[in-house]
Length: 459
Image (cartoon, rainbow, N blue to C red; front, side, top):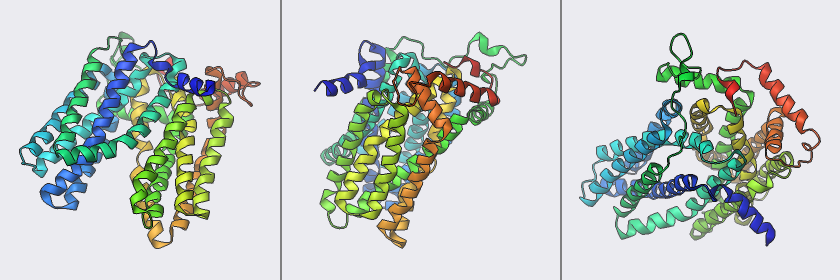
């Protein structure tokens, strides 16, 4: 019982005594839930109005494309603008867009052009909100609590994936416009929570930023949006850890998307009624992992991360060896459970190596590149299963997970994970005796690489 209490205490540490972080996190939690309801109801509304499955898919595709196109400019704005105002503007824009859809559905005038215009606004606003919110977190919590914040975010995402679909379906059955109205309400609550925050969240240009002869700051604040976005990509390219992290995130998201989609192919044909339960069990694995990750990764971070990576690859192989519903559910739940053990220290470490004036652009790069091939995961899994078999499809994805394991085991990642352990006061197996050596190695690695302007101010 004490261990369970300790894990929970570690997870919720940022919520204690930090009113403004609680406000932002609670508002964002409601907002994410509302968005989940809209994303479920939107294609159903379009399908009902047009009778076209293509049109229903088009609405979600247009939103994805709009968000993707706005990612890099959004990162620049997150570094140059008042982040609180930027997030409030994004929430207000999304509320207005979804309200337009709600009114159209309520009045039985669901015109596809109106829907497409609304999803473009929603997608762009979401792209602007993301990096601003990620960059703002460090201003509301102590550095020691960042790992717990990452765990909280993981637990939130998994919990909403369990609650959202059935709740959205229920609300849509009551009234097709109801999910949209609730989404508008959640955006409004999030907006009010942000308005109550008084702590500066960064992102504004300071006098120190304008030190260059041309009036541009060290962070490129005097450049155009495109130049600022390119400067952000160059910053990432000069940091070996960030470059490898982009590759790691892209492959991990691609593999996870394929493996989780494959559950439908394993369970669906013989147990169609159990698909919802299967996905709920998988999400529960993710929730459990997120709850223990912040505390567990502080104990022996290198061993925990490498062990979790080995388990992930092994679980993928287990499904290939025995592609039965029971094996698939247990293995994928296991993958989701150990996922936070890998993601939490890596995501937390980003805050230590990236200065605040670059954080928006780095986060937007992670969103863009890390999610670039995610939509292809399910497509590739389905194609491989159709043209070969589910067994060989999972074997192929097990190879991808093995590549992710190799990336995680590289010296660059191990040193950064060791530094995460040193910063959190862990007593790691391999790091306790060589913490200073690890930190020195990281600093040596960073000094060997060309340093972008402003990197010296990292904290």
